Image (cartoon, rainbow, N blue to C red):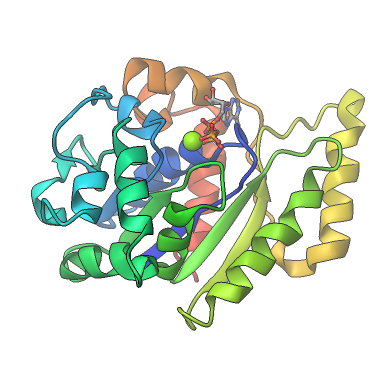
Length: 248
Ligand SMILES: Nc1ncnc2c1ncn2[C@@H]1O[C@H](COP(=O)(O)OP(=O)(O)OP(=O)(O)O)[C@@H](O)[C@H]1O
Ligand SMILES: [Mg+2]
């Protein structure tokens, strides 16, 4: 199992949308995929109609009340859901001396069951994000190309670099633009991406996720973009991203 964390401390940049649709794309390519909702907002879980208040979720896994395998729900794709309660569990585990390794340990028994595991991180570099990065082989950074949105990128890569002491295999898989608008009037999008390329060179992926309403609408219909709008730009772009990810 190759594990990817989707990380950005900035909110609303497309982390959850990426886990949902990259996961679905990898599934369409015949890979066995597990997605983990590690955010107490539980947006990923709600994209599948899984309620905010459930009694088995990633928090109870981290607290070792349940085994990871017993919490998985199949919604076409296998998901370990989250809950608003996760905040409480995050506090609880933060006081453990080796809290950084809890997620890695709890998902270890699933290693042989899946080809890919994608982790949806909260918009913060918190205890939970530390756990995600320590459990991962790679991390992916969605970037919404706005004024100075590249400013926070170095914060993430420095943070991850420090964690390689705990997880030497951790690598940046890439940074990719989301909600990209190629329209000439949105020249800012282009300029931000060019500047990010100067800073991060080949780590900026060649796949841009365009601004596409089907990506925003599909979770409201409790499904991914491939089921909701298979011909949309959103479906095309996330399939391209999956094509790139399987080559890593
Ligand atoms: N490429 C896109 N085109 C159009 N809308 C998008 C796109 N990507 C994401 N969105 C929409 O933007 C909003 C924020 O996206 P998303 O929830 O994936 O971000 P996030 O980084 O997970 O946010 P948070 O940090 O709050 O968890 C959602 O309403 C989502 O549907
Ligand atoms: Mg999210």
